[in-house]
Amino acid sequence: MVVENDPDKCVYCGGCVGVCPTQALVLKDTRIIVDKKKCINCGACVSICPVGAMEIKK
Amino acid sequence: MVDYDVIVVGAGPAGLCAAHELMKEKLKILVVDRKQEIGCPKRCAEGLSNRWFEKMNLTPKKEWAVQEIKGAQLYSPNGKSIKMKDDKAQGYVLERKMFEKYLAIEAVKKGAKILMKNQVMSAKRENNEVELTIEENKELKKLTCKMVIACDGVDSLTAKMLGLNTKLDLRETDSGYQYEMTGISGYDENLLHLFFGTDVAPRGYIWIFPKRKGTANVGIGIGAYEKETAKSYLDKWIATQDGIKDGSIIEVNAGVIPVGGFIEKMQADNLLVAGDAGHMVDPIHGGGIGIAMEGGRLAAKHAIKALKSNKFLEKDLEEYTKEWYTLSGNDLKRRLKGRHFLEKLNNDDFNYLAESITIDEALRIGNGTLTKKDKAVLITKKLVTRPKLLKLMIDYAKD
Image (cartoon, rainbow over all chains, first blue to last red):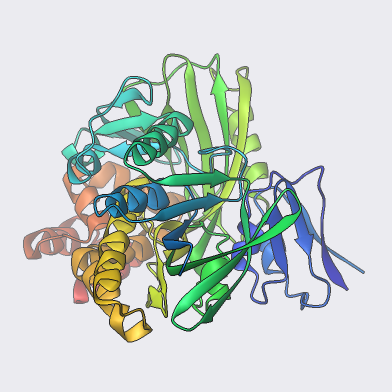
């Protein structure tokens, strides 16, 4: 399980990047890139996302 | 030979004010920013109070200080409101894109260089210098400098790359969402409007920050652990507001707000941090433009000092953090206390307070500046019939 970003909902504010404890996320232009090796599936980005664009996918 | 004396990462209010200050010494500096446009997309309600104009020696200009503000109106959940025309609430709502471009142009006039769409991908320290790997158009380049000032916002990775933990604590971070709307009415355009209530905006508030006639930033900030997203709370509220619900949305903004106080240590070897990256935000209203500018300016002063003495180690730079806390630490402590009081209030509490306390008392609770006499009046008279508020106030009054 890792977190996924829904680019249709995302407004690329970078909030998820700021709360990620393992630096698994990077904001490049209008895209959130998830480093699946670093993601520990903690859900911090899901909690903070103002628009519900981060989801934990099974 | 390094490429630059200082590389500032992030061309926001903190980074650009740092650039200004650095150019007083005619240094070789570079400002890089990952975005494609300065000031855009904004993550901000754009309010800036007059005291920051004074502190930063800044004169409001028509092209970016677009709405003068005379005070604020606070609404309790049952719709009652109080107006405050306190000096502290006076200022301007900005057009940030124009404001930051103005700051950028002024910095470049003094000799600074700015590069947009340049993203720092990694950083390493060697021989008392820093090498940044920067991506532009899929190409990587390496630039070296003696000092890095990281002003790259809440999603700052630069400081982390250089070994400083700037991670946000989720409990101390608010989730923000905003529309810039036009064709709206029904509010005094010379005031900021703040709506409180646990149903409306749990652990936060909804705001209307007017920007010219009929246009305003309408936004929300809430805690990270609320049931729904910030967007969902804001959409629901707007749907109930005559004068606003039929307006047009001309911009969608989002962002998270570090409201838990500054990071403890703002320096590492060859690195200083300012602005949102250092959590320089007011814990009560979540505003951060002014404080970021002040932080950027101070970081630059300490970078200059380091360059002059050629000392860049963490311990050589610790004066920056010390001076920052001397400057703003006490204010922060008081405001955090105010925040923790406000966070515990429910709808009934807000309604009761709106009826029973004066605007001065409300302001002093927020500012953490209640006098002994205020506390006595609140505890023995005004809150005595409300056990929960009484307990909160007694705890608040303790230290």
